[in-house]
Length: 325
Ligand code: NAP
Image (cartoon, rainbow, N blue to C red; front, side, top):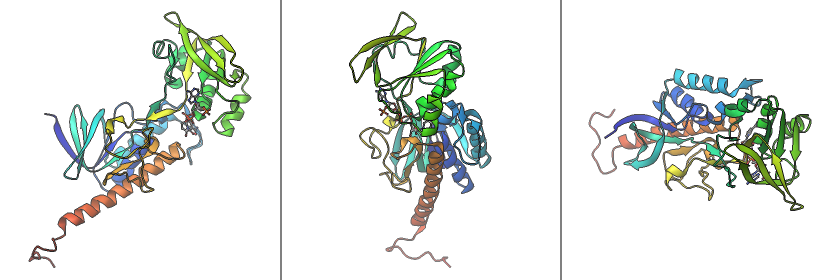
C-alpha cells in the first residue's frame, strides 16, 4: 500500500500555472506539493524563446521554467515527479493517486495543461520519431540543413516555424485556410522570412514513407487538387487537447475536456480549483496561466481558512466550551 502524504494544497501539474500557484501557496504559509509527470515548466520548457512575458524582454523557456521552479521551492513548495492516475475526494480530503504515494490535500489545484492535438491521419503515428514530431525544441536539431514541413496556423505553428527556419534548408508551412490564426507580429515575421514558404488552403491527408518519412500527400481544399510534397520532417502544431481524462467526471468540463471554473478558478467540486491551459478560458498565454495560478492559490487559501473555522465552530446544539474567552 503506497504511503499517504498530507499537505494543505496539492497542485497537479508543474507548468507555469502550477508553479505560480505553488509560489502563492508558499507565501500564504501553506504546505504545498506540485506533482509533475515530465519536467517543471510545462509548455514553457519546450518553447525556445519567450518575448511576451511582462517584465522580461526575452528569456528561453528553459530558463524561465527553472527560475519559476526555484522560486516556488524557495517559498517551501515541494516538487515531486510523479504521474497522477486518479483523483478522489474522501471526507473533504482531495487525494491525488500516484504510483509512489497518495497525496492528500485540504484543497487541490488542477493545472495539468494539455498535449499536442494529433492530425489523426494515416502514417502520423507510424512515423512519429522517424520524421514526425510535435516539439521543435526537442527534435529540430535532427533536421539541420534539411527540408521540413510544419502544419498549422496558430501561434505555435508560427512561432516554432520561425525557430526551425533558422536551422533547416527550407521550411514549408501548410495551413488549411488562407489566413493565419496566430498573432499579427508572428504572421509578419513568418511572411517575411525567406526560408519559409506557405501552402495555403491545404490539408495533409497522409504521411508517406518507407521506414523513414519521405513526403506528404496534400489536398487543396478549394480546388480539390492533390499533390505529393517531398519532406524530411513534419512538425505538427494544430492545437492541443486538455489533460483532463484522468479526472473521470470528477469536475464539470466542456465537451472537449476543458475544466469549467468561475472567475475564482473554482470548479464544480468545492475545494478543487483549475488553472492554466486545462481550464476553459478565452486566451492561453503564459501570463494568463500565471494569473490563473495566483487566483487559484488565493482562493484555495480562503477555502482552507473557512473550512478550519467551520470545523472549530461549536455546533448550535452543543454546549459552549468552558474555556472560551
Ligand atoms: P490554436 O491557436 O488552436 O491553433 C491551431 C491551428 O491549427 C489553427 O490554425 C487551426 O486552423 C489548425 N488546425 C487545427 N486542426 C487542424 C487540422 N485537423 N488540420 C489542419 N490544421 C488544423 O493552437 P496553438 O497554436 O497550439 O495555440 C494554443 C494556444 O496557445 C493559443 O491560445 C495560442 O495563442 C497560445 N500560444 C501562444 C503563444 C505566444 O503567445 N507566443 C505561443 C504558442 C501558443 P484554423 O485556424 O483553420 O482553425
